[in-house]
Length: 235
Image 1 (tube, one colour):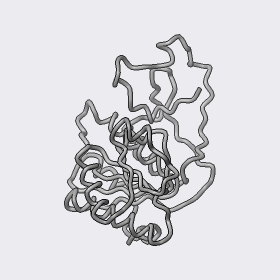
Image 2 (cartoon, helix red, strand yellow):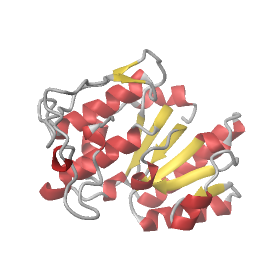
Image 3 (tube, rainbow, N blue to C red):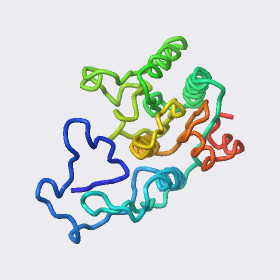
Image 4 (cartoon, one colour):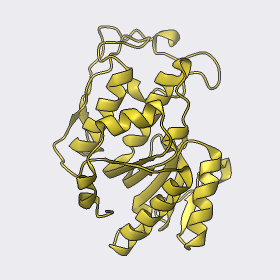
């Protein structure tokens, strides 16, 4: 049984918080912490950890006394994650779709790309833009869509960060970050959510922000310089 506390984002969606101890499993003193990460490049993993560690102390344990520790990459190196700032959410959406089209022109299959968003209206904006340019895509917004989803169909996957948990894609764009709530009672929860989104990316991670917010400011502070855009071939 494995557990990543930084990815605990569904704590109270259908009742009381779930923990191992709450169902009679005593994990304290009986756990082996697996720190090796096989999904992400070293650069993506370090960026995501730098972000989440601002909100979660590495020494803080959850209800099962499992601490949040820095994971270790298996040694696969790649490009640095990129954070781009725009004036409006519409500009974010436009740029995101432009990147998808550019990557596909460069030979990247559509199914290697995913766009993650944080609110339903953002998904609608993305879909409208993708349809305008005839970009094949699957909008992961209903139960039926999830049940019929086929990762082998050559199409871009468009979904909320919540829906992305458990999935992975070579190239991931996260948009709409500036619109996330950052009130004190939701700050940690949404930070975990963003961590989940970042770690869906196996090789390349692009994040877009617009209006000033707690999370956009933090990402820009951690983020890569504009000179790194050339490494993603989207400058």
